[in-house]
Image 1 (cartoon, rainbow, N blue to C red):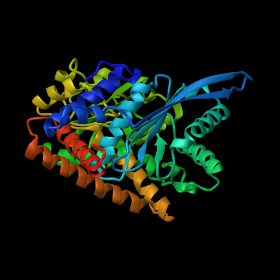
Image 2: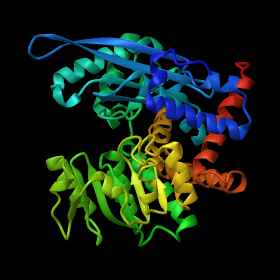
Image 3: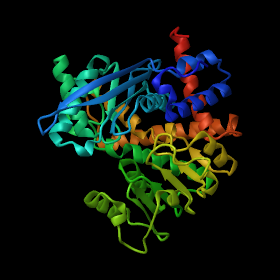
Image 4: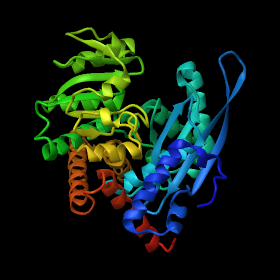
Length: 425
């Protein structure tokens, strides 16, 4: 492989994504030239977004859209607003979206976008101007049959409504399918907001059936209490698990007797900090301590690279369902596998959001609307089937490796076969 010459190649998140690709390629016996093709995005667009702030001054923000691979269909992936967004992260996330969509069996390629901004520092008007101008700037490379963005970190259905409206103005018609996770009035689904967390909980439930005798009565710790973490907690509790610890940026709360998830959600909504939860015999601990608690199931649903070779030996959970993208490093994955821990990889565990987005998009394209119950039942069937397919493949062919190996092998193989059929390689 050539020495890094592109800015994104030096990014640690990108390097981790390439390492995972190489591992899958080795299992599949793919030559280096295929890795070289797959490690780069098909397109990486950088745009400047000048915004007139409320004080009258103009501030310039930088945004990116990475379109990794379109062999299986239009690019698909979220757009995030964060201060630390960078090209390497965006490219890596778009690569993971390629594998996630391939593994889910939906007709999408991988894309991802982001703006380097702290959205909490912007007024609602500034945020709307930023969103509209960003989408106008990338409008030439997106579309219902080309690239379909969705929410990610610090973006939401309102952001998608602005995107949808801006793009519809540009093309001159209501382009319902240009984004997903829209407000229900604009063709979205109420259950889209719960779908990623629901999927994370669902695969944890299925893994628990196979590995630790079911989810009922088992203890769970959840790092991160945004949409993914809170709904994973809600559904796991509904299915009989005991949620003993949750965290956010403020810290973590731990009660071995169990936490009241509904009360936690109320506290989080009202105060923005889970450490303000006071019910029961609760103890404040750190995010790092949460990962090492004596629990049956661990859900890392915050950020990448939180489980590493430095703390993997101290992890006590027997099932880990990755709600975040890239929370476990390759080195930690091997340590956990040797310890007998099942790590359900992110491209399988957190695919509920993009799968629900496909359900929304496909029905937008047909001009029909689904009920929430129909959409959630379809998601349940699809994700249960995908988990069992990956688990069986893992046990049959790749049991000497972490489950991630089987997931990546299936996903990469489908993309490579599609590229060959299309005459790309």
